[in-house]
Structure formats: C-alpha cells, structure tokens
Length: 323
Image (cartoon, rainbow, N blue to C red):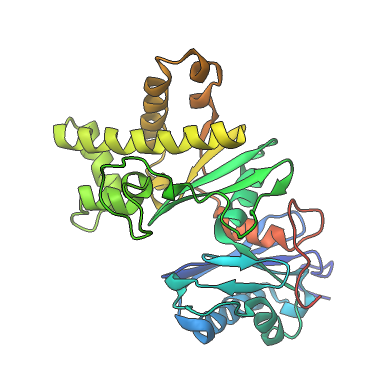
C-alpha cells in the first residue's frame, strides 16, 4: 500500500520535456497536483532519458510510491511524435537529430515496465488547458514561445494530422515581403507572433523577460513599445483568426512564455482582433475576440496534460507503451 492509503494505480506522472528544462508533476486520482519538480534538460537521447527517469523517480519518492504503482507516465515533447509506437523524430531542441527513436519504450524499460505515453508537447498542453479551465467544446492551445504553433482538441479528440503537423500555423505566410524563415519560406507568422520575434524587436533588459518589459513600457506610454506591442498583437490575432476560420474552435487559449504577461496580452490581442474584424460583417459574426482566453497562471498545463494522456478515457489517448 502506498503513502496515499488507497494504492496509487490511479496516480500518474506528467513530464513537459523542453530544450532547457523538464517540468514534472505527480497527479493523484482526482487530477490534483501533489508534487512538482523542475530540472535542467540533459541533451541527446540518453540525456533526455536520464533526466526523465530522474524526475519520475524523485516525484514518486516524494509521495512514497514507486513508478511501477502508477497508472503510467505521460511525456510531452517537441518534434515529430508517433503516439502509437512512442517514437520521436528530429527533436532538435532536445539534441535528438535521429529519426524514429523509441523514446517511450526505452523510458518504460528504465522505469521497470511502467506504461509510458509519448505526446506532442502542445497536444498535451491542450488537454491540460481544457481540464484546468473546465472548457468543453473544441479548443486550440496557441503557444507563443520560441515559435508559434497550436495543439488542437477537436470533437473530443486530439488532432495530430497525417504527419503530426496539425496546428503548425507558425509557418503560414504572414508577410510575403518579410524576411526569410528558417523553414525556407518568406515572412512566416512565427517571425512576427513568437516570443523570439518579440525579443528581437525589444531585447530583455536587467534580467526582466522581454515580453513583460515591453508591455510595461507600452502601458507607461513609450511610443516605440506601443508600436511593437500592437504589431505583435496584430500577428497573434491573425493566428487566432486562422484557427477559428480553419477549425472553428470555440476556445483559443494563449499559452507559452509570452502568455505569462497575462491580462495585458489578452487585452492587446482582443483589441487587435476587433480591429481586424471591423470591416467584415462575416468576421464580426464569428465573435472571434470572445474566444480568446489565457492559460491558467497557477497550473502547468503541459505536464498536467501529459499526465492525463496516460489515463483511460482521456481525449485522443494513445495506448501506453509497456502496458
């Protein structure tokens, strides 16, 4: 019998594995976060496995359970994911340049056969956001980080697409006269609506995150900051409009590092969306501004969603590897 007094077969661990850190949570049967842990990511296949194993072990030890007692471990990762096999390809931010790495089976083996589900990090975040905010209906989690992309929860299922590229709206052209994107196209949306683009236009100062510094300066009346903020908000609003027009999602949840700005970001994006719809009765009829929400500041939606993905009756759940 584990420390929770009822066995821990209904508990699960979720991992959000990023290029700089792994954030892990331990969820109890009611999906309450019992423990959380953040550690630096070690790059490469073996480094990622070592880090993931460490986080799972420490979270379980904190609760007095073993990995084998869990329902399973869910891991959200960037890159191309095959949830059915637990394989990961070309996760360059993790230092994984290989194709079809059996990450979930290898992690499961390290954890003594504990079931492991591998999911795209934004898909996991979409599941976590829907749960944390209590949102029914179709949802897109729009991540504003180094790049721009969305996790999609449609018709009660995760929408991954044929090659796992569903939601990669950051590579839709936004300004065809703009600079060349690393993807090879011109003027892609993520060159304007990402955290990286914002920091390039307004570099961080004195250790303050660029987004927070920019929005504070704009609120104080700095004209240059206002121009950069409004241009950024226009691009994000275009991303929101794209998600509504292609998928007609009921909710677009702003997430990623820039979303830590909070209400001022949502207000700027809503204002831009209203301005963009002003001349179009069709766009106005869709109520796009009313669909914009913020990811909760107090819930790490990425690892929470990953932890939920390993449980039965979760939207889009893949069969765990090692079960």
